Length: 433
Image (cartoon, rainbow, N blue to C red):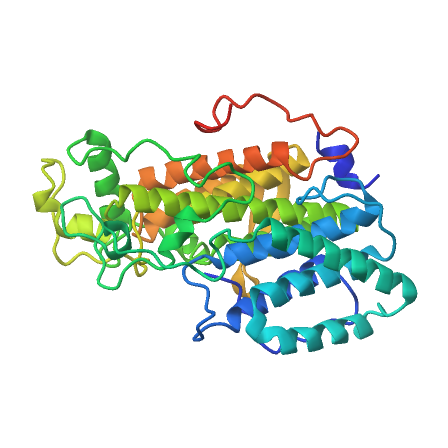
């Protein structure tokens, strides 16, 4: 049994001409190819708006997991499809990823087909056993494609104009000159949750409350572009976490899998669980953003004299350290997906305590001893960047953790003990029971 079975109970910059490697690490290889395929859509009608590419990653990794498990049969499949199948699980995973990408990115089918053939040849995946495995991989992907048909993710549906899409000028409300990207994302069918609003939180604090004033003054002080109270370490934290969580967490998963000697099935399950959780977390965040339509710090501080709170003072010239993303504040998308990834890894390995390096962009790493500390730093980072109130971050982190726990307890479980979910569901949302 692999090691993990004993333990458990904005994007990566990628060259669009990324070539097939000569030694198969099939899970990470096709993660990289998925990212390159997503990047190739930029500036085309198929471009993924906002963070909606997380849905592509979830589909590809669920398909690879299922393809491997049709042969290895250690864990439940995402689609519910069962074996036994025979053949090479590496070839199965590659075929599943290829099939899913062609489905999600039909305009790139010719290039994807060529890459797939190159990948097979470069990794000696052209034997009879590989061909049989590839059949299982295509069947695994097809099952998920059918399962996700009409999920609202591809092609992106249109929506009638609403305040959450276009912004509005009322005090306390998000404002936008161009509209929210991917406004449909908050109503997309989740991968593991029962509904996109299952983890909908309580409303943000009242503008006249002490909690709001404290959060307002904190981000105004520490998140300012100029005359900020940030320390050098706090500024470094802001810079490190300017990348999307899917980038640094997926690179870190690759390192963790290697260091812990995970076999192919265990590694594919780890990647799939994290992608599924991140996808459902961003759906959750977008649902919350659209529901509450709460203003960002840059607007709140510039109109602080009009919010009715005697403890806030406005500054019409205030600028955040980083440009403010073009969607509402509450709740934070970064902390939803970052919180879910950190908590899923913690659940997977059965502990919060582990020495590791978080693999940042451009080879910059940060050492940690607890997974939860990464999530805590991300909460602070969005304040130091000047783009979120603390309550938008902490509530989002909680949402992401609950999504991860929900998914871990119910999906891709060991087939020899599928009913162990390690706890009750009392805090998992109004649809949990």
